[in-house]
Length: 515
Image (cartoon, helix red, strand yellow):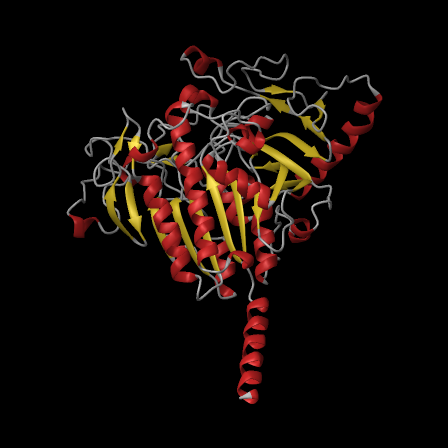
């Protein structure tokens, strides 16, 4: 009896040691156009994000989490490659300093020369799943299962539409390598009421992935729902539950999804061995007005390189490893998630290229640690600003082009800061605009060029820029060419559904990016 008991104890010790040696599961929750100020933990007055707020209270909040671009596609490409869009090719040089992304007529996608996070994780035994929006190219060889993911439920593009399937096809929904329907058809969205079940489906698929993989581990889950991108939507259950209209309903359902995913990690017993990160692909789209979010105190929004365009929520959750309720002043970029995930997984980061992401795993356990590092703010192919430490220096400024203002489009509504929210691309390289961003995160009060602080800091930041430009090898731009023939006329799997559409003749032209 005693020998049997000792054998059982030794087996349990062995299992425990093996579990301790297993690298952590990694879950990245990337929202779409959700602003820093949309969370109760960041001061949203109605406190309509109880699960996300609780996640922060149980984990760590990063006060300075930056995206790598002020809009969707290049931001996501940077997260999954650990490299700035100017390096990984997710930009256009058709016109100087213009934001570009991947609409369904884009010819390009993420370059085969780039190495994506799931491709590295696969080599060390991870199973990777993406649930939600991909946005890195909608044709082979750019699709998720061709780029390291093992499972996909979601869409290559945003839920734009509805279209007539004649001049423009509706966007498909994929399960792994085949479409299973289209937005506004098999997967309806009521633009008038804002009702859709997509967030519920994305949540169910994420929870299902965790339950399937938890016993086999390790796994990487990339949860990328898009309900907070205009036109926003939520299910009937959440309709009218927010004080903030349809956008608030969408936030509330996403918050419930966060709670369901964390519960799935607990229910499967892997919560203590799972790092979960919550963020957004860019700042809130203030241009969407009541169908957009809130960037708190930060200047402007999506499409700009001001704080409101590129500072995003940053929450880390890892029970037993991250101290509950901790706050870090470490300046993070989402590219650091690439390098940190590789570090935690025991993978090998590529050494034949510059990585912009830093491996910051020690900061998770020791939030007081701070590494002074530069953050570069690009709008397309133009370096607009740089931050290092407490200081942010603007070399160029541009908010909304004049022709768009005349059409009622405004990326900085209610914000008018002299010499900053310029309606034309304005070069300040001879006398950069400098802020102590810790003291003035609103970017309203630039330091005087005659001040000792300005005189001391600008040369240091210019040296950072000089070094960056000297080492920069631009990737081949992937977002230059558009062609109506490459739209979603006949995605993989359309034959089985009888949903193949006739494509028009090919007519490639240079994409026009207005801002």
